[in-house]
Image (cartoon, rainbow, N blue to C red; front, side):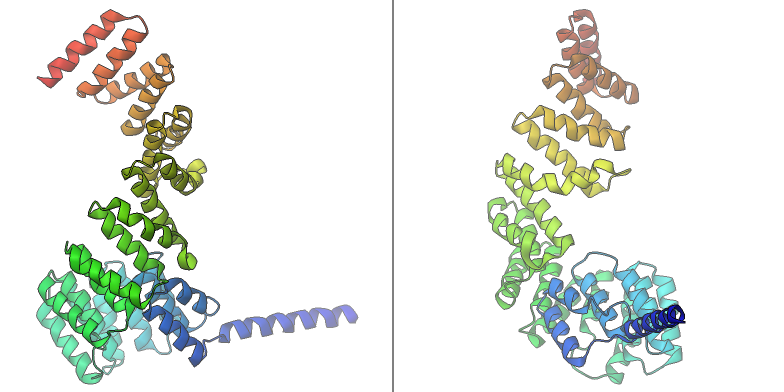
Length: 404
């Protein structure tokens, strides 16, 4: 009997636990605090504030999705889809499902869902605005503007939907009109770091360095702990060739708020900046932790491969060829047909005086592409080292023919 009571107690306890988890919601004070952090572009802080309830609470889930979208990381489309499942009614559910599809660039299915949201509730102002943004991306600006006007009529609060309008103009290639909307947003939200960052990102993408930098500066004055703002300003300085100036911002972006995505992006940028300024050992120290996880990977992302290649080059620059070899072997194991990696390994073998393995890699390279004269010249040098001058002459002759 005691055992039965114990089992029943455990069942009831677990049911209460799951009930409490399902009913977990942000209080209005917590939501206000999270929203304030979001507006200050303190995205790490926002994520921490909503983390406990985001999987069960609609408001928390929506704010998490918006945060991930704002800092351009993770899977905002998936989070918006989760938000749709938590929505308080069918119209709102269809709206966020449509926006999830929009975030995945599936504009026609997104349009269908957003139209369904409006059909379910013609007074859903936000659905009209999101549909307008979607139509802009489908190059139907005229009908898109009609939807924005309907949204404004239904909810006349100032600048309620201007972010989506600006996004729409960007998608439609109307950069001057987008800039005008961003200017309006900034004038109406002069203390919002996030809005300044929005406009700064727009300027950066448009190649307008000075106004972008001014907006990042203003954002950091308003929110000096924003990891995202430091990362973006560092990236803009780096892209303008101001490598030394990008280092302090990248260092801060590496550690503030502890958002993994932007911590790693800032750390990678820091490694590149150290490389560009001739601080190769520092570059290696920053890059090594970022590529350590690739040791057992079965495939490489573009970013991971670039990082590995950069690390190999930095090892070569300080003449640490053994470390360069262990790193290039990672790439060759995962991508055995990578001519870039094979060429690097062949060169490193040569530096390690392992000419036979160097010759093997050059043979593979030439077999894969017999039209590259540089590989014939490199192999000729290896033939000379191996005491095969006739083979070296043949390769040099072939290289000259290809050059001509």
